[in-house]
Length: 171
Image (cartoon, rainbow, N blue to C red; front, side, top):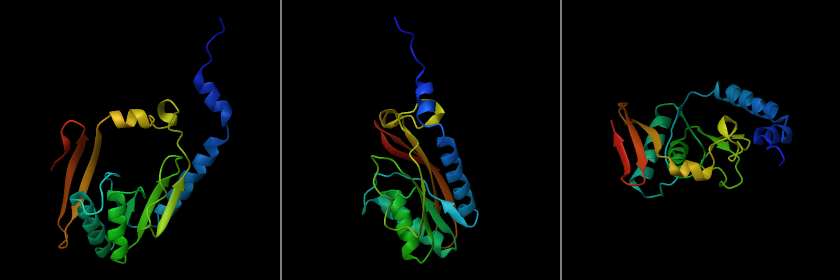
């Protein structure tokens, strides 16, 4: 019987210079974002135009832009697209931090600036990559939703997406 080879060795040998590419992307990202006065918005990629979540995210993006802040998202669809759209339509800066994955769509069309990062190897075990699409779907999604009203009042809620109960938010 042949000894079992550690899969991490295959990963390391396959792309030994990868760490320098990733490090360069981080440096570029930090340098660029250090010049941006912005607010990061996290939300679902699955909300649809016209839905209540999409409309709230669009209003939040618009309010932040009017208050002088850039809107920073993952650059994807859903709530991210809505927040970027609101900021852009209000004349503000709209930044997308996009991860280049083979199965993901292109960044949304409402970005004034896009920072792209290489594939995080979704099938790599442990911290070298994400936990993979099949495991990500199995765990509950959590995000923090912040809001800024037209008069500057700020609020925050913790939202959870649960397959059995749907989306629930607490303040």
